[in-house]
Length: 215
Image (cartoon, rainbow, N blue to C red; front, side, top):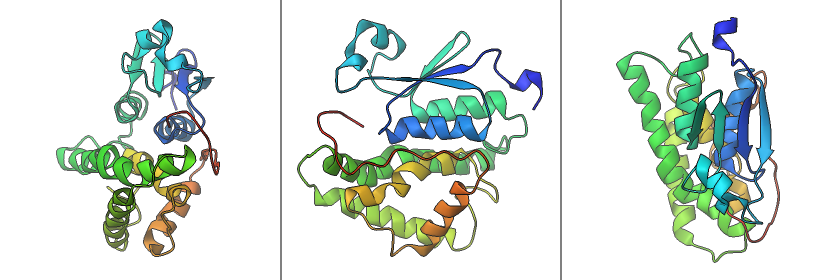
């Protein structure tokens, strides 16, 4: 990787250990082998509501990155920025219209059915919220379609991993924390293993329960 494709100083990442959205960004930074420094945001203590943090992200959510004079929030937006800024090969976000559109399709699913299904099911369990059977139904529908899709290809949007895989990985891998089993989905489990075998892979903290904070 040339100097032009590396940040002048470590990228700063505001994160929270149990946030799948924040883990997406940490994972991609690690896979790109970019230098970065993490700042853990005390969500339980309300640090995301302070004027200092709201100046970074008015929505009061992690993740946020600061890359030189660029400050950016929203996990999928950050993945897109990092791919376009630091992956000159175009591997992680194809530059051709169809390839980019295939990635965008999965980014939309990551922001919709993935979060509304496996993501929210996990939040309900981890933080002692009321069980919502709709979350499991949404998760199982997405997993069923992913399993069929992955039966004929190794990764979601291309023959090699892209930011589509990064965006979908974390909440899928942690679906069992929300009571959604991955056992019925062998192709999904094989895909998770392929992601976890990538050089530089870092996992997210697994915890059975927590209270009082948003992930």
